[in-house]
Image 1 (tube, rainbow, N blue to C red):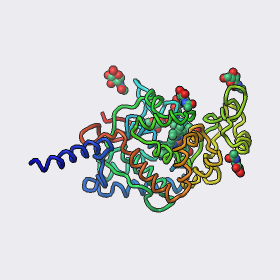
Image 2 (cartoon, rainbow, N blue to C red; image 1 turned 180 degrees about the vertical axis):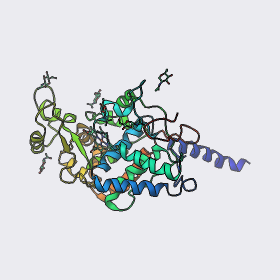
Image 3 (cartoon, rainbow, N blue to C red; image 1 turned 90 degrees about the horizontal axis):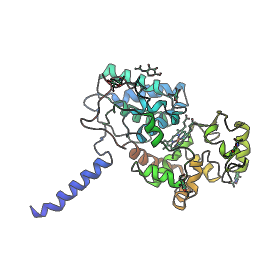
Length: 323
Ligand code: HEM
Ligand SMILES: *[C@@H]1O[C@H](CO)[C@@H](O)[C@H](O)[C@H]1NC(C)=O
Ligand SMILES: *[C@@H]1O[C@H](CO)[C@@H](O)[C@H](O)[C@H]1NC(C)=O
Ligand SMILES: *[C@@H]1O[C@H](CO)[C@@H](O)[C@H](O)[C@H]1NC(C)=O
Ligand SMILES: *[C@@H]1O[C@H](CO)[C@@H](O)[C@H](O)[C@H]1NC(C)=O
Ligand SMILES: *[C@@H]1O[C@H](CO)[C@@H](O)[C@H](O)[C@H]1NC(C)=O
Ligand SMILES: *[C@@H]1O[C@H](CO)[C@@H](O)[C@H](O)[C@H]1NC(C)=O
């Protein structure tokens, strides 16, 4: 009995840690209830990506926004109701897209196994699969077993999605509040290797950084001159590639341009302002390292605040809660 105490204690401790890290998610959760689930998600996602190369950026960002607000519970997918404005209609939703793709995947799954696969899992899988299309193999493992939340509030998106003007300490704090480390922060920022940002998210860095009509001195001046040709004024809303020339290619080039002080947002540039973060960012220029680390950090992000067991529900449609 006595000899087993350490074992018992370690099991309890591991159990608690497991829960904190979303340990109740599993590999192939739908193996028996919907054996084709992951295959269907991949098939439908790849079909959409093959005709829309911008989709990977949309879906992975949507997954991030989902996980940072009430955990990865599909709340970002819910429509506003007569009573309340949902996350997807909050200001940080700027350019969120791909809802129709999630709805399409869901309706395919409902035909095969009605009421089984959660919208939160669909989003986690589809963001992995969309990014993986380019490689024709899964780039990270997605554990499953998430259930769907019933609440989506625009105010919570505002409060939880870090804005592009955050400095390093605010970013660190934002990620820490989700159980993510500075390492995760730097690694996951590498997702900015794909997709676009709109001028109004960074044009203060070009035109009025300190209120004196000046530019951000931490932005590469050659690059700032180029960006000014894209963004003509502070209110311009043109979309600009975050990783020019390779913005549809998921690679480690984000960290190469970051080093040249060409990170688009203040939040990107901020990663160079902390010694430890800077060191990580420079290491991640190596693409093998980046892919390995990204896989691990995505797993951690995908486990934030998940609903499992009997919590939440399995929505029938991803944009509305079940009646
Ligand atoms: C570290 C804090 C972060 C900040 C402050 C931030 C901020 C932003 C902003 C302002 C945009 C541009 C939105 C627009 O103008 O349309 C953007 C785009 C994007 N973000 Fe982040 N982001 C962060 C972290 C992440 C993470 C963790 C991921 C995913 C793992 C991610 C993936 C993306 C992608 C793929 C896009 C491009 C979307 C598109 O092309 O439509 N971001 N981000
Ligand atoms: C949710 O909103 C979208 C966009 O406005 C709309 O296309 C969709 O039909 C809505 N979903 C439901 C179930 O009403
Ligand atoms: C709106 O709020 C009322 C009262 O809180 C509630 O009874 C009703 O179900 C809500 N309607 C929707 C569409 O959420
Ligand atoms: C974003 O929110 C605005 C309102 O703030 C809304 O008009 C717009 O349709 C939303 N965009 C998406 C893609 O849901
Ligand atoms: C970062 O931003 C926060 C919030 O605006 C501010 O309180 C803090 O002083 C800033 N930190 C640094 C090091 O600039
Ligand atoms: C630049 O910022 C200052 C201080 O916030 C403001 O008074 C001024 O109007 C801004 N200039 C422009 C062109 O928006
Ligand atoms: C700015 O970018 C150019 C390439 O466009 C690069 O050669 C230069 O080193 C960069 N300057 C700084 C300060 O990073």
